[in-house]
Each structure stands twice: as structure tokens, then as C-alpha cells.
Figure 1 (cartoon, rainbow, N blue to C red):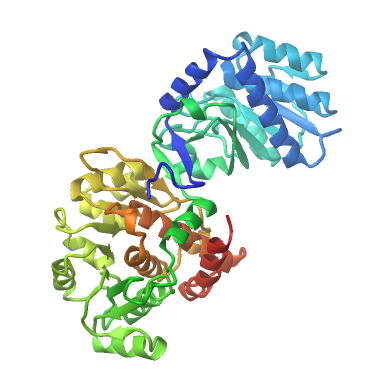
Figure 2 (figure 1 turned 90 degrees about the vertical axis):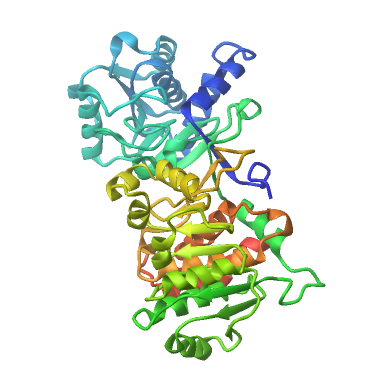
Length: 489
């Protein structure tokens, strides 16, 4: 299934890609049309967040250029609906003149001093847009600090100011938004790193860019795209347990018996036709007691999961799985034995510390720029790399036809997912998806990891409902989440 045609997936782009598309659209659009489309969408999103517009107090932090213009025009639209709108001009001499005139005509007030600001119900961050770099300048940082101390909701215009739009890094002071309204397409920096945390919820406003956009740099799964993938993999009336896929799990050890049980339990979620387990006797006994349908012992499989819970013979376990010449998920302790490309398709599932060791890099650097390091590892090991984190990044293995394929960025989940055993569940789930993947999926394991990460995060959200969860809660939630996704468009 092509990542570019998968129904419902959300593509993301670099600033350069978006600017090129905007230039093409501007060439065939009436003057000012794009800005008015953006302002209409932005003001509508603000109205939805406010609930009622009339009498509400809105502060526009307006920088120079088109980003400030979008915010000023949106402020004018809100003022015409009865909002009390005040604009703080952070660069008065470079303010967008047409937007400024529209706001004044609509009854909005304009100031260039923090001393004149009044407490607001909503603030628009129109300080800088996708062309800026570095943290907030002192005057803008002071304005943002004032807003932050008031505690009012913040809507970022296109991107939270101070965030790098391409990689989500933050070099200094930056805005923390409750909602980011971005125009034409999602930007890379809204999906990963500090940018993902700063953006809050992300809403994409269609301004007509789609026909002009190139192959995306990243893709985020949605419920629709995951459902499409799962429906393509579901059994037919002629299917039996072997045609549905058999996944082998070699995980757990005398010290970490639970890791083996969790990986098997996730692999046994029902997506694959059968699960085999190979491992220490003490883990095998636990597996039999919990899952009598799991076959303990050697036999033919369509995919392997190795490494969760490790043990002294992890290197040997990996070698034996590779010898079966089937695709595999490599997790936890087995990752330390991946020092070169494997001779079979593989999905590597490290966290930042494990990937740092594999690449001889600093863990902090990996956490700050996950896309760069996931791509580097995918190229070095010629495998798909699922880098676990706040926003899990999945980099497909590059090919001669596609040397820099789009990465997948997972946006599902909850902070409570950071719990012992969650990674073992993810590895087992990915193994089931790998064994049961559609016939036309090929050897691109990136989307297997992406679908697995999305289901894993969705199960965590379903189980949590805002409260702490355990790995057992994840397992219990998986059937309901899978059923829900399969049942809807």
C-alpha cells in the first residue's frame, strides 16, 4: 500500500516545499486571496475555541510580514462579530498595512506598548511565520511572557513563534500554544520535538495548496488511514490461520519473564492467525497458562519478534530468527547486536538511549532531533527504524527508487504511555501486523511500524481516559480500538 495514496493519512512538508506551493498558487490567484482564505479559517477556529465571540477580548500579537497580516485580518473579522480586539504591534514600522487598516476599520485598537495591554480571553500569536529562525527577540519574548502569565488560551498562526518549522527544534524563547492553525498543509516542525509540544492541537486550513504540493517529507497516520490499512489486511472467507500469518516471538528471560508474556499477548491480539513462542521454560509456562492457543515450540512463521526482555543468548536468538529468512521486529536487548544491515527486512524499535548507542551519538541530541537520527539509522542499517518517544518517528529503509522516503510521525497517545512494558506490547503488536500485512505491502516495514505505533497510542488513550495506565491496560484496550478502527471510515 503506497504511503502517498493511503486514504486519510496527513502529509507534512518543509517550509521550502510550502513556500514553493504558495508561489505557484499566488501566480494564479487574485491579489490578497490567499491571505483572506487564511484569515477566514483562522478567525473561524478562534470563534470555535471561544465558544461565543460577542464581547470577548482578543489580543493579537502582530509581527511584521504576512504572518502578522494573517493575524490582523483575522482580528478584524472577529471585531466585526463583536469581539473587543486589541493588537500589539511588535514591529510598528513593518506592520502589514492592509491588515492594520482592516482591524482599525472594524473597531479594533492598536498599540505598540506592553503597558497598554488589557487582560484577554484569547491571544493570537502572529509574531513570526515559517520563514523565521531562532528564538523570540527580546520585545516579542516580553510580550509572550505577559500573555503566558495571564493564562489565557493561545492560538498560534501557522506555527508557534520561535519554533523551527522544519525540525521542531527550539533555540531560545518560544510560544506555547493551545491550538495551532496552520495553512495549506501541516508543517514538519508541528509534528516532532519541541514543536509538537508547543503546537498543542493542530488544525489545517485548506487554502488551495494541495495541487501544488510535492511528495511530503513526513506523514501522520489518522484513524481513516489506519482503518484502510487494516481492512486491506483482514481475512477473507477463504482464509485460515496459516494464510492469516503466523508470528514467532522469541522474547523474555529468567530475569524479565513479564516482557516475554507482554510481547506474546500483544502479538496474540487477533490480527495474525497464530502465534508461536520460543524462549526459556519459565516464560513458556507463563505463556501457556495465559494463552493456551499459543503454540510453544519451533515451526514455520511469517515474521519474528526478538529481543524484548532479552537474556544471555540474545545474539543467538537474533541469528536464528534471521536464518529463517522472514521479516522481523528487533527490540530492546537484540538491538545491541545490530551493527550492520541485516540480510532480511527488519523493523528496529529503539528508544532514544538505544539509538544513541547504536549510532555512537548523544541521547540528548537524538531526543532534540529525532527525525534526523531515525533517518540516519535507517540509512546505516538499511532497515525501517521506529524511534520511540513523545512523538514516535518511523523512518523507512531508503531504496534506490526512493533514497529519502517520507518518515512517519505518530500523533496518537498520552503521556501515561511512558510505563514499564509498553515497549514490549508495541513490539508484539508490530509483529502481528508484520505477519498479517496485506499481500501488496512489499518489504516497506515503515508503515507496519506506523500503524502499530498509532494503534498502540490509541489504545493508551482509550485505556487512560486521563488516568495512569499499565501495560496490561494497553493489552485490554487493543481489541476495542482495533474493532472501532475497522468499523469506521
